[in-house]
Amino acid sequence: MLRNVPSLKKEITEVENIKVTGKKIIIYQGAVNVNRGIEQMVLAMRHLENTLLYIAGTGDISGKIEALVKTHNLSEKVKTLGRIPLEKLHGYTVQADLGLSLEEDAGLNYRFALPNKLFDYIQAEIPVLVSNLPEMATLVKQHEVGGIIENHDPKHIAAKIDAMLSNPKQTDVWKTNAKKAALKLNWENEKTVISNLF
Image 1 (cartoon, rainbow, N blue to C red):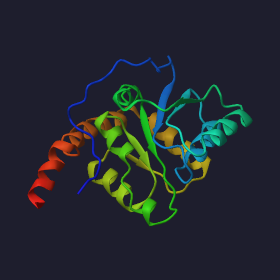
Image 2: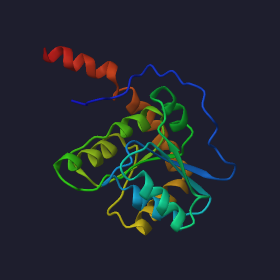
Image 3: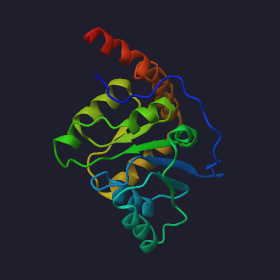
Image 4: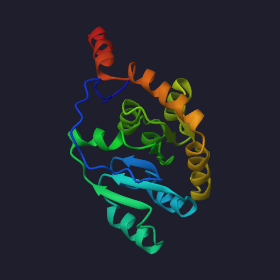
């Protein structure tokens, strides 16, 4: 059973345009905390061109992430959006070409997690790149909605991102599959499951 899955009824609130001509958009949404793979995402951007990473959220290591961006002169490649109101978040996510969920294997809570962001990306009908952790990897393989990293080395992450964003034919397949998956992985379906349990 899925927890905290988004609803099919999405009201898109108008938000700023984060698209940039000639650049692919990557998004991470969620808590900016340890063991989320955010530092590695940022460092991966050193190896990518014509690509922007947007980080939507705040948390314990927000300052560390901003310092990392500054230290590696990545301010033109990594943008922090801060905390986005829930009603506006979908409006940003749908503009992205790829959604990241790169949690580290830092205990059972992470190992068997199915983060909300993953379902939000699917509802936005964008491909995803996830960690090779059991539940996330299984969901991505089952619905064929994106790729899976083998490790958290920034060069490896960058290579995966580049390969995904450089394959428009495969991207179209992932998007189509995400659209199909969104019709299954939503609150409307899950509330029926919960009702049947009771």
